[in-house]
Length: 98
Image 1: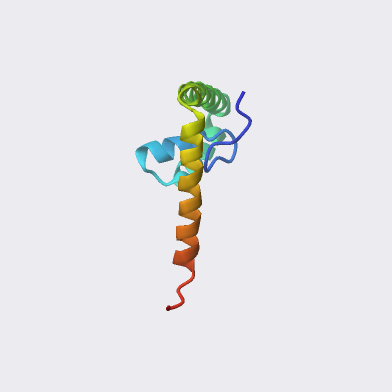
Image 2 (image 1 turned 60 degrees about the horizontal axis):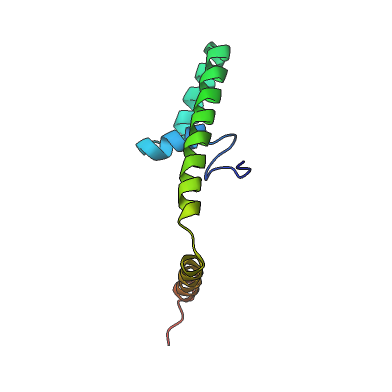
């Protein structure tokens, strides 16, 4: 079971996921959802719960597929890449001339 929130999520990540997919502003989408919630409360809750379940199932399928591809060599390679990215960001952050 996934216990982490998706990136940009406040609750289940439904609005953030839709906004990321369609490249919309997440706060506008959240405001529209709040309006929908005020007008049709039960329908809004059911739609949100259904989308949250759908996103959860899609995300768990992707994590299972990606977990099957992991190996010690790949995880070591990914760690080296993350280390290089950290070093690059550190160098980029220090704008002192040499």
